[in-house]
Image 1 (tube, one colour):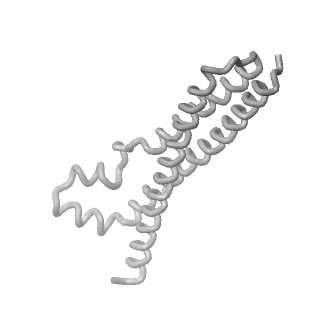
Image 2: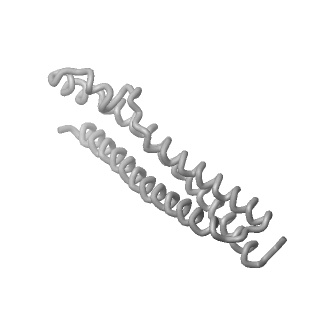
Image 3: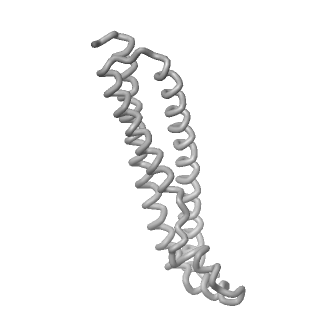
Length: 148
């Protein structure tokens, strides 16, 4: 195997590993957001909330639901792609070997774009989760403080 082939194979493995890491982070954050949403709903429905707490808490919940939407979008399967599984599903066993050998650089480029898209959605979801959590804390302070 030539140096160029080894470099392409290493780059391909690195991109696939980054996608796996991003998917793992996304799954963990999605579970966290779901737990926060469920916990907030359970606690808030039994509390006597004042109007400012409703506004802050409602805005926080909207941001958390938006974060969950971004996370789900990040892990949504892309069956319309030109590389990887969708392409391979249309080829015979003999054609797959040729496509992988001749198209590794294109696959790396396609997977890299996919990784950047997933990472961008994850980063935006983290930002929304932090903002939503901050608003839920404000709502809790407004409720405990008794602001009317």
